[in-house]
Each structure stands twice: as structure tokens, then as C-alpha cells.
Image 1 (cartoon, rainbow, N blue to C red):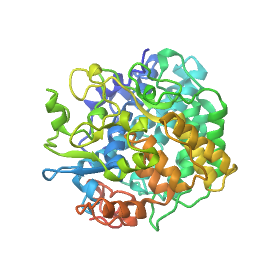
Image 2: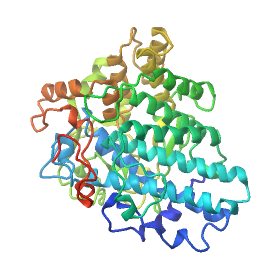
Image 3: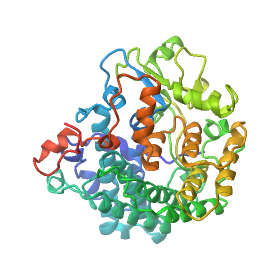
Amino acid sequence: MKKIPYIVLFVLILGLCSCENELDQIPVSSITTGNFYSNTNDFTQAVNGAYSQLKAYPNQSLWLSEMRSDNIAAVSDGNRDWQGVNDFSPNLTTTGFIVNAWSNMFNGIYNANTVLDALETKGGNISDESLRIRFGAECRFLRAFYYFQLVRLYGKLPILNKAMTATEVAGVPRSSVTEVYDFIIEDLEYAATNLPASYNAANVGRATSYAAKGILGLVYLTRSGPTYGIEGPGLDSNEYDKALALFNEIITSNQFAFLSDYASIFSYTNENNKEVIFDVQFISSSNGAGFPSQLVPVAYWTSLGISNTYGNGYGASNFNVSDNLRASYESSEGEGSDVREDFTIQLSYSNPFVKKYIDLSKKGTSGTDWPVNFIVLRYTDVLLMKAECILHGATGTQEDVDAIVNQVRARAGVAPVSNVTLEVLMEERRREFLGEGLRWNDLVRSGQVITTMNAWRESDDLLTISEVIPNYVIYPVPAAEILAKPGLYTQNPGYY
């Protein structure tokens, strides 16, 4: 099945990157002037390029959410770049993961804005009006998606509604989280209205109206979470009924389905299956994925005779699935009985790690070249978020919640439960979505992140991890952005 060719414009853009600090914005280049955008094919390439920064999202999710959470008990043999993220250091302003997430997502916003600007000035060169509208809706979906990732990571952000030069960006202050969310919601509402429900095989991977509705539902769910007394992603807005309505639209659409076999959701030979609402597309060799190799000890690859899995000097570091999580699988129904544990965790290795996406028979040219997509939003997630909304007071019953959770548990081969609470639901999500980069954000929006993380570091005797405080719900703004124009931004509290 043909996948959307994100790589086409991405390669060109990489050769044009700016050395400016402000948001690491890609400058306006020759591709946006002259004869470019003169026909539909030019716009198609440009829209494909706007998807390109999605390639960074899987690794960001694994390093900044999965590892940050109580799912992973990482052990370093030295001073590694991820160490401060794992240990809740207040000194993260120059850490590569933090810096790159900021620049990657803002570059994605720049790419989307560049196309949207071109649609305003040269959109008449697209002969099909419906295609012109769709292109705009795709770019607004992507802009909203990138901003949503950023607001969950950093809180307040500069709002950029058009492509800007570095000098122009240097005059844009950070807006409040409320204003950022309003911007995100406006884009997602437009996308939900103007994107198609599905695509033909040649356009697999593009955002659909249901992808927009699903992310919009997650936006409402996220900003309904507690504030923790900081300017982070939660606004205590109590919009659970709004989120529920969107999740119900997806559920009743009959566009998606709950697959009966857990492993088949992630199979290399069953991509873009009925569970998938939105994913990031990868193909081997020319554009393979690196995320299956993340959070896997280098020694494991060495033992298989496979090299070049990181290229970042992680040495003998181990990214162990935590004892606490292993106990959660076992207490759920007895050791070894949950099919998700066997499928997701490499249990036979000395240090259990996440192997969810590894199929050695499918490896491409290197250990960072895997032809498998990363699922951003899947149907089971929507079902469980519906249950979450109901537990927060949205329309529905305890029986509805129990039925959803037990459907998920039945597929996993474990016994049903009753009277599911928010805590029980979050622990079920933890087992279901291990390795999918959701855990940290789940804890934050549910109000459990401080108590859960501190209880975990005590129970698992993780002495290197600092006490988790509300300031650490978000990350610091990269130092280069603070220094680019002194006084424009202030650093998030708790970081230096």
C-alpha cells in the first residue's frame, strides 16, 4: 500500500535550515517564491512536506513521556543526555531532547504556515476547489497537532499564525496557555469540518476528519485536567462532555474497529488497520523509523550482531520496564497471563525492556531503519478516553465504564473487573499503551502525576530521581530561546 511521501519536500528543506536561534525557524527559501506553487503538484509536494516533522514525534513521545514516567526505570553507565529528563533535573535548558522537541515542532508549524500563506496568495493555481480546501485543512490540522505537543511540553508559547523570519519571530512573546488552546481548537474545528472521513490507498497517512475530532477530544480532555498551580497544559476547564461528544462521533462512525488480537494492531503486515485513527508513516531504507530501537539497551543489539542502533553514545545504559509496572501486569491476573506483557516486554533479557515494535525479520538497512508506522491515536484509546470522561462526570454510567474496560481486558486475556475507578482505569491504560508514549500525559491530565511518581520512586527505591514537584509537569524553554532576545521570554519556574 502506497504511503504519503513526506520525504519529498523534507529533503529539500533540510538543506535550507537556518542557524538562527529564535524557534530554529526555517527561513523563507526559493521554493516559496518564483514559479513554485504554480500548479497542483507543487502544492501537493508542499503539503507532504508539512507532514515531515511528524517524523520526530515518535522519539519525542518515548523519551519525553514514556521514559519520564513510572513505566521506565532507566539506568545509566555515565552522564547521558537523557539522564536529566529521567531524574527530574532542574538543569535541562540545553538538553538535546528538550531543545530538539521545541525546534522540530516549531519547524513543523513553519512548514504548515508556509503552505497556508501560499494558499492565500496562489491557491487559485489549484484547479480543484475541494482539493484546495483539503490542503488548507490538512495544514491547519498539522499546525494544531504541533502546537498541542508543544503546549503539553512547555506551557505558554508564541502564537505564529503565518510564516515569519527569525527577526519577526524575535518580537513575538509567549501567549497564555488559554490563548494557545483557543488557537489549537480553532484549527482543529476547521480541520474536522473540512477534511474527508477517509482516503484512497494512494493517500494513506493523511489526516482525516476523525483524526481531527480525536485530537480535539484529547485537547478538551487535557485542558480539563488540574492546573497544579502552574501555567501548564491543565486549565481545570471541565470540558469532559465536549470531549465525550467527539469520541462518540468516532465510535458511532463505524470507520474503526476494536481488533480481537492485540499483536495484530502493531504488525508490520497489518499497518493502517481498523484500530488506527492517525499514525506517522515510515518506509524502509529511504525513510525508515528509528523509534523501535529507542529505549532498548545497546547491549541487546550487540548480542544480535546489529550495530548503528543509536549513534548517540548511550553505552551500557538500560531502559528497564519498571518493577512497579511488571507487578501491575501480574497483579491484574497472575504472572504471564496478560498477552500485552508478553508482546510488549522482552522478558527473557537480563533487563526487561520495551520490544513492542521490533520484528527482526523486517529490519531494514540498520538498527534505525524499520518499515513500521507509529500509531498516534487508536480506537482503543478513544474507547478508554470515553470511559475517562464518564468517570469525570460526563454523560454515562458506571456500567458503561466497566464494559469498556472489560472489553480491553478480555482481549488481553485477563478477568473482568467491576466498579472501575479513575485510578484503575489509568493503570489499565498503562498496561494497554506501554511503549506508545502516553503514560506521562495520562498522569498529568488525570491529576495523579505528583503522587504517583513520588510513590513510585519510593517503592522502587530510585534514589537518583528527584522528588517530583508541580513545576516539573512541564519542561523548561530551551536556553537559546531565552537568550535570543533577553526579556522576551521568562523561564518556566523551577528551572535554571
